[in-house]
Length: 475
Image 1 (cartoon, helix red, strand yellow):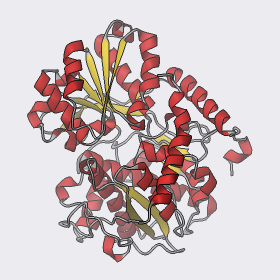
Image 2 (tube, one colour):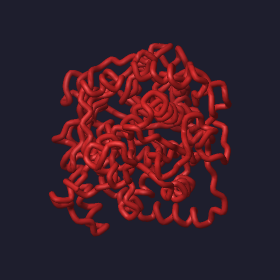
Image 3 (tube, rainbow, N blue to C red):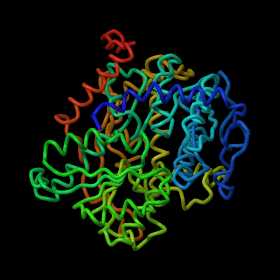
């Protein structure tokens, strides 16, 4: 696959999604249960008001966060804790702080089922709500479809650890913010780690590395970077696509057993991950030779396999656990008052729950940064929030002040860099819990920057987008 060919599919995806939207006669909104003990994942048609426990109605006096989610379908086990964490953080900010500098937060969930057409439908439905802030599509396919819509609507997209890798380049992608990492930075970190294990990147020469990936935009995204690294270091890259949702992988793991790769990189999501680990166990492939992307390193991926998954590795963008101050504040201000979104307090602090919390913190802090420029105590427009997203500066000290400690790596964004951090850690499943086994690994800018620049310029050329001028960066 050519390193940049997948970019040309963006237009086709967007058109297909738009056609699917026009064919939909029903608009559906999902609202999470109002209190702990409710049926997490239930779908209703109620707007996020009193029924969501802590969210006032979306009016011109509130900062509105549209929440795309998937609590149904094959990806629900992973989508539910992510969505719960996002809701609970917003509820906590309202309850503990009275909102953002006095501005209350409102929100509404819309169920996508991880489907691109439904994601576009949710976007179109919620983008006109007063006080709309930004969108977190929670899907690479939906992100691709919205990338051409966002500049027209002037609404930013936050894609934490996913989305379009070249959108790190803020000169051409004014409205995309792939915070904390992309699938290129993930692939780069994993190859660096494997090189360290082997005693140097040069020791990867002649090794076999298999990529078992979700056959979708998400799964295909790391391929250009891996191809570049294979060319640089001389390892043999074997690509093994898995048809979504990934419940049938016997043929894939038969190929793995036959080719005997030195390492397997798992680019999966949802049920695909646990299925892959079970198949690896059945075929005798060592789990300690398997490395997942950060969407293949959460409790739902390993809990059904338990001890059988011992030794399995995955990248991590955020720490798990209930120890951080912010998680304790959520338990105190949300769950102790009966307004928790999750089915059980036990979910609070899991990998994906905490990731949802981190995502909403970044959104809230972008609004706070925008208020510093455009007026404290005021509802920010999406354009003003975009400025805040581009001028985020969350130092280690600031993260500690917010109660996050070292849950995530510090992040600083600029006009040219919409990612802010390329750091991730490797964690290992010990049979009962995840534990980090490395320090933060930074993606190599010498490898990344030429690919990002070429990809961004190619996309801009195809779409007729001009590079932003300095004055635009300050507005």
